[in-house]
Amino acid sequence: MQIPLFLKSCLRLSKVSKSWKETVVLELSRSSISGGSQYKSAKHRVDALDTENLTHSYTIVEGDALAGVLESITYHVKIVPTEDGGCICKNRSIYHTKGDVEINEEKIKEGKEKAMQMFKAIEAYLQANA
Image (cartoon, rainbow, N blue to C red):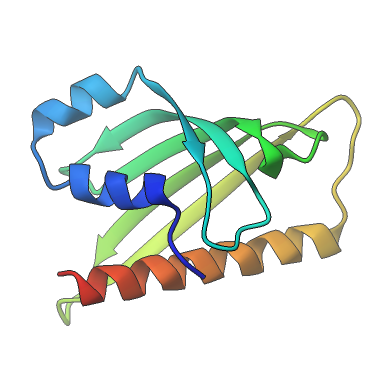
């Protein structure tokens, strides 16, 4: 799995400065997704970025990933340093459904597996480009 271009640009921008944080929080971004993904586009908003506490929250508000049954998906990511110099990435996803739509356990499991694949791709990219 390749990292979508918008994530690569976020990884680069996160190294710039804290002043970047203030401009990105209010910005909506539309991204074209390539690299073999089943999704073609996503419109997302950065809800919070805390470089001191290593947390990042963002919401997908439009795009193929919503599959016509979701209003939005909100992600909360926290990086927790470990004693051995590594880190643990904690990720919480909140799915906001349209109306009374229910998502079955199989779809939730499938989504978790795709998220893990993306995380592994990001991890490999960061290790290769550190």
